[in-house]
Each structure stands twice: as C-alpha cells, then as structure tokens.
Length: 132
Image (tube, rainbow, N blue to C red; front, side):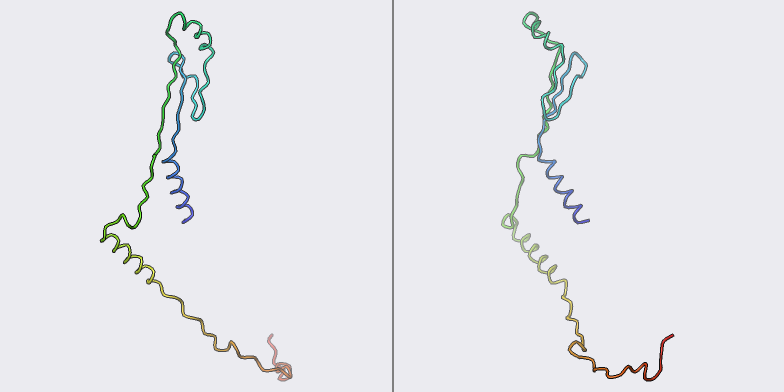
C-alpha cells in the first residue's frame, strides 16, 4: 500500500509539471488530424491552395494549437520557513512519535549454555517403553 501511494504521488507531481501542445488541422469545418507532441499532418488541398493563396489570399485550411501549460515552479519549504509555534509543534510531534515505540526486551533463554548429558544407553530400549 505504501509503494502504491508513493508511486501515485510521484505521478501526480509529474503530470502537474509536464507541458504539452495539442495541434489540430482543419480543412473547412472538418477535422483532418490531431497531434499531441508532433506537428499535425496537412491535408492534400493545402498544397494546391498555396498556389491559389497567392491569388485569393484566403485559405480554407486552419491550424489550431492548444497549449497545456504545467506548473513552472515548485515551492520547496524548509523548517526555517515555519513560525516558531509550528517549529515547536513539529519538534514535539517528532519527539513523541519516536518515543512512542518501546524496544523489545531481549529474549532470555535460560538453557542456552546448557549442554545435555551424554547418553550411555538408550533408556527407552532399556525400559522397553515404545510409542505405538
């Protein structure tokens, strides 16, 4: 859950700072091509209209460019930008949060250094006691 949240926040910051343009080419009222990062393809009529453009000075082809601007500057704040009361709150919260958790006591194993006695004979066989 923590990784998903971190990745989603990183993507939100990335998407808010990216700028891009959407270029649309119309021939009359008909949309011919839309392009996001490259130049939109021109229609075949535009080549023939370039010759007529010299005569009529009006073209039926139009290019529309929409610019989506991202955030230019990110504001980075430090602890010095906070008021004295806010600095006191952050310091108190950090201190109390870190001291909230106690360490685990060391697990004491009483027979850690005890070695078992050497078995001379198998007692189960000697007493004829078997698990069935």
